[in-house]
Image 1 (spheres, rainbow, N blue to C red):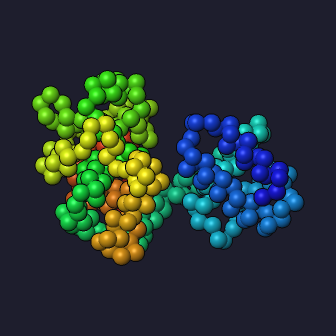
Image 2: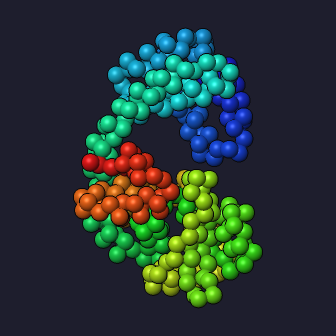
Image 3: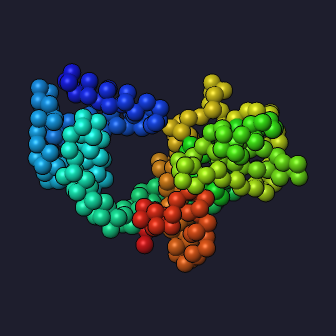
Length: 297
């Protein structure tokens, strides 16, 4: 990147402050770098926004090496930057609408291909859970039974009544596990992707093995810690899930999204609408979102 591009992306990311995660900032930067390569053909002296928007769109649209998801990522990046620069971006939004419609139409085929490449099936996933022990079991149990994302697995086990109360009331952004007065194990999500839309979520965990593992833990410790005794970040959690999958199937690509897609596909095959509603509610999104982004039918 030339100095002008470096300044642009740096200032844009700085303007976001704490409204986006560090992982998202890194992703934006990587998308921007790839966009420059594809648009400017390594011409480091040219500034991307000296090119008219319609030509930028056409370059992306006609690039034979970009799939629909790449094109969407590029146009979203252009839209964000034009907005940041207080420049018009209606042409970009109009093209994005077309791409979104195409992506939704093609999504079931893409999801089938993703699951095929992951090497996992629903039955193999259930077998992996049954065979798993200790930390691996805790992770898989939560992913499968509560349709969680990586961030949802950053969980504090606590007996602190103030923390519990604050999380339940939405005053503290934390995911927690705690035993109530009736010795029920409560899993509370107070820090997940769609919290602002769906609020704090609470589930009771009845699984005896899961409960036995939690009862061995010390109070006010995180469920999953890395080698430095720090809670895994969402990015580290993704690598951890993949490593669990590779223990069962070598070179597989297990992740939280594929696990969710496998579960959705399973209940779609059974035509079990109640289960599909439950998984959508667990995930924290609408059935329409489930159908549009995770379905294989």
